[in-house]
Length: 167
Figure 1 (cartoon, rainbow, N blue to C red):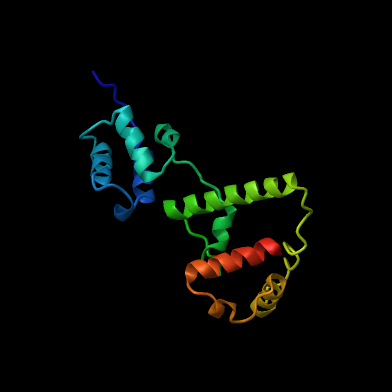
Figure 2: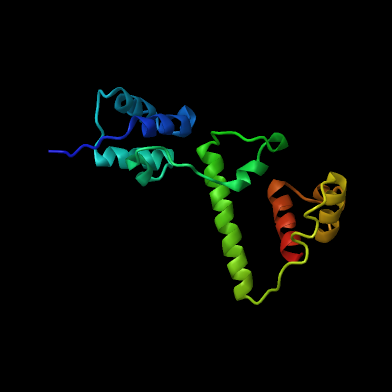
């Protein structure tokens, strides 16, 4: 006998909004739709599989109401900083991963005895794109067409990463 779990309709609706057909396994969305209609009740293993496939944390499926995922960095990933209600799972996952990398980098630099970076935050009140671009290029030692000296995107990335590390 398999144990089944009731998932709130609000959570199921939220999961569907979080999921795009091209980002999940072919059978995932139809299975969630069956759960929404009440024609099937999921087992723990099915919920776990859908959680992995959709990259929605497993615990979210057992909440009564959808979680509010607060991520202030999302404000800077839109045109003219417009707010939007439904960022894709890919965007949420990418920003969370970048935040983890930032934290790791901070901890790693502290452990190596590095001081605060004089470049970071220096122009926090400047909004002129040309001034920002010029400052960044000068700080990194990059000319206007620095990428023309590289062989391909990977080489450009490597050069940029080295310049940023050196700065």
